[in-house]
Length: 585
Image (cartoon, rainbow, N blue to C red; front, side):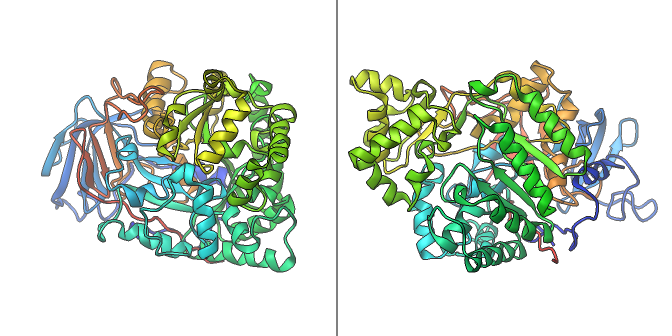
């Protein structure tokens, strides 16, 4: 059962593969026969509607060509769809939507709003894009499940993603408690958009065995299995990993396989940031396919890019690998963001051995000259596993945010640029930043390839995910612009995909992966999580120079039938809730 948002899911996972489920999810969508809740139910009697969206171009999420219609909403659900040429619907309120398209709300399959949703009731970064659901707990590091020690450590480890949390009252320790907190949001009124949660495997490992780079004992593995099972029972939709982040990256495949078996038993999915997006990327993808096949677990590949010079033009090799796996029965989806640079923390570039022991130990190693020289050699000469096995190019590492105000002059410049201005080696500058900012600096890493971005987004199992880090003075524009950038730049301007197919990538496909039975389509009986946008003008306002500029061409966004964006402005409505699934093992 999906609670909080009032949404209901099957107690048992579907027996068929996810590829089948995607097809099944889209069958019969759109117009069909109205259910008993529709405005035309009970003979000729009509139901009084709360809202009618009149004369809109319905892009229903199935990928089929759009059709003009009136759409009626009542009690938070789509209750009527009248095609053009049939009698008009009437309701308490009417929006004349000629020139606007109506689509399901967009689902951000990779979000880092874990604290932002509790910090900012406005949250226009996502609401203004038409995002109605975010999936949190990404990259193996988040704030539940924890104990007091683990919470303190994870807050330090991902300060660059979410801030240090000093403004948050951490009243929870388990997954259920975190989801309850999202439900209550601000003074019991909820949060800006809906949110689902992945159990973070790195946090689980930290909780069970600390920051040690070794195999888990049988007792520690049992504890990790228990923590994952409890999180799934409390409503998580799956498990994530960050296999280039400590301590999650210390887990061998056998350990991950055992945890994925637990995820599979509950009908969830595994979402890894795998071991390399650079040198060895294809092998890293293959490793995740093999691991989840052995566990019988669904796989969703996080920000599935092919970056760095070694992978230029190699997206077709990745897609061929995935096609072979899909053809033999693997259950695979993926997400990407529509930009070439990546975004993470500067500390993430360090070799894994430097991260053993946790943040304070890392800082101690950086302060020691001899150890710092070993770190430099690993990063600049060998190619650290933190930098995906590729020797770091400081010209590609742009500082996007710092925790300490005195370090603000570094923001917006590459490490190499700052080093030249200071008359010192790039590593000296980077080391200074790591120490003085307490590992809190975020970066843009300019290592992507446009042809790879376009090729991967065309694939039939692709979905959209912003990977949006909202912290920093100059964050990646994907945090505020991913979904309108897909619709405007890639669908309308470049024609990479037809608009109706692009909408399907952002709505029904992720809803199917999350096994949400009544979201992701414009269909009678479905939740009224919807977006009205202008196909001719929709565009991301955010740029690398002005990353927090809101999009254009999205005048209305509704969650649960309530306006969160109205006439292009954020309302004070807090319609978001935690979207939970409580499956039966």
